[in-house]
Length: 178
Image (cartoon, rainbow, N blue to C red):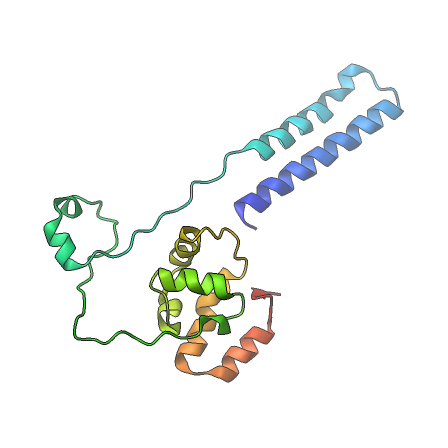
């Protein structure tokens, strides 16, 4: 489960528990000293519902060598920053694949991925989950439940293994593992 799902589950569970205990205490006319469990569950429910969301991860794109040499800031970057990539002028740009073949990728997500430079099955297969999340979040898309299977599906498509891709997609429900 994702953090938001877990937070909402805890909040809902504690809220339902507090409600049931409160109803039970009202029905049996319990003294006020017996209400502490319901009050504690209610506090847990409110705290879980109001817990701040994690900050969105940001992933920076690789910096071309020409720009890195001109910018003194790049030399001072954190050692965990993405490596500087040389721009290949001699290589022709790869022809874009139809990413909508991947189950769970529609026109909007395909456009977001292409805008982030992920326009082929090979690039999609090589992308990390954090890269994909950053690409779709940059386009204002916050919900992509099938994202964890995109790279796996793209590996089949990049190899041209359409039977393998079809078998994998048949084992998925809406792009997610059953």
